[in-house]
Amino acid sequence: MAESAFSYQINTDLIKSFYSVRAVVTVDVCVEEFEVRRIQELEAKRDLRKSGKPSTSNFECQICHRMCRSRIGLLAHNKSHS
Ligand SMILES: [Zn+2]
Image (cartoon, rainbow, N blue to C red; front, side, top):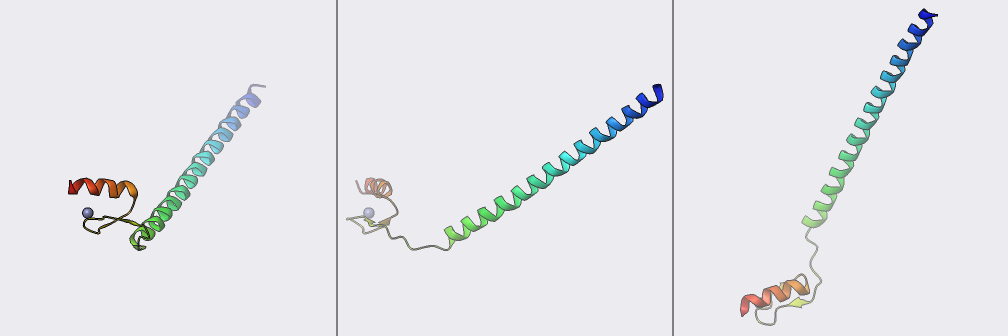
């Protein structure tokens, strides 16, 4: 009776350690995959940004004809003339 309880205890410990190791490995793999995917997305985003698509905006300064990217940018730029 005592022997079976002892072996049961050992088996429980083994199962617990197996699942905890497995859970840690699974989390590590998921974190690693997430990190790789995140870096790839950031690099793609950076490449898109650095490829320098010409701006098609129509926010041109009436004084110095500088092209601004947005209306608010043009408003901020106009303050430099006043
Ligand atoms: Zn200007």
